[in-house]
Length: 305
Image (cartoon, rainbow, N blue to C red; front, side, top):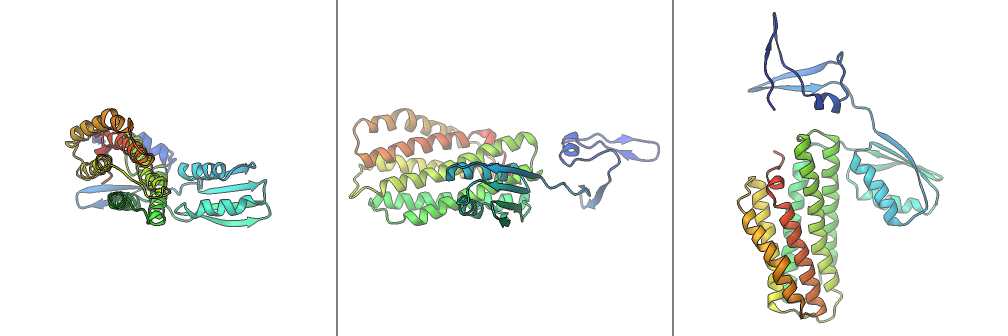
């Protein structure tokens, strides 16, 4: 963003963005810290942010209910979560949920109460590191799935499940980072939220494909069905290149491939297929749609520096 320099009697001034003032809860009498750099001026707030604390009662429910509640407050950037538990059997479930949330720990537990607190503050550097790791894991996952679809042998379910869980942990932390730090502007932040959400879905769909087809004894699949999945995997590699280079030129090819796979070839293969082929076709079609969505220029040009 640009700011015009205003000449005063004995000094020069600039205005600060109102969004930044509000995000850091600053008032007219607060002080900020200025540090000169080689070609710029770094402005920092000295005001310590207040810890965001939430207290709530968890009603009796399923493991999925508990996961959704805890994860939602984690993603919102809550620092302290005080939970009253109505069911004594709930605590082990909460432990498992929190173990998958980077920077969140149970710091107190007694009777029907537990306190969850943030033990690590996210940063732009962590965001970039974990996003890149997630993209590399997704690449590796689809390589493994391709290898096993070629052979129609699926012995690596536990390895792929672990990778899928890692991607989810990393990208949930990235989403929390967007709420807790100012690593980009508000407009770009909305696109990054969509990107992170869809990357989780992409990794999970590779895993669900593998999980379902691995349960079938002696699976069979035509070459054209295998090639459909391989084509979708190649689209992800194009997306990665677009994302890191902030270059949307591959979008035309991804758009064309998605339309052919999702609206034409997938449906034609569905007309006559085995159960295992239907699993590959369905997930290939859905993956192609997700890749089309995350490859759109608004998303691929918003990479954090």
